[in-house]
View 1: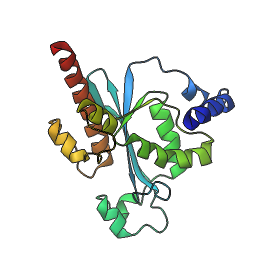
View 2: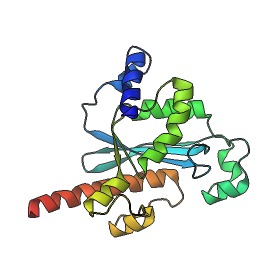
View 3: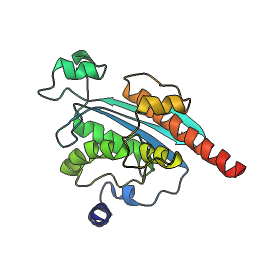
Length: 206
């Protein structure tokens, strides 16, 4: 309820602004798979390190239409944190600022629906700086693959969330670019398409 109310307020405030078009209903056929690497697991204090997005159209992942952004190293982030994400300090030396990354992400994603693994977490990492800098949260419709996988396999949402790698293996989807944020986005897109295919086959057989 609070998210819906906030979205309505954001739409009213920004309808005629630079990003007003983001709040219009999407009428196309594309989705965007999203992935965010961050400095830690607590979204209230973590900072984005890298952001990636890739478009889907029909049953295709458009890897030629993708976005990968490495951010300039946040203050206080040590080498061990970077190593856990397969990064080195040098990898972020030419990183973009968070403001630049968010602006490029908005332009790339537009008002297309989003697909993500633990999408709420990725959105929380992005919406905090988005609201501070642009005055709104991402208004896009979204599909969380954890929830979709649990519904498809009739798992309770109270159960421990499944691991990304394990679900990819069960769906026979290759892990693309391990420790790469773009690889995670592409793998997420492939998992979504596989669940689409399985759901279609189930409807036909039923």
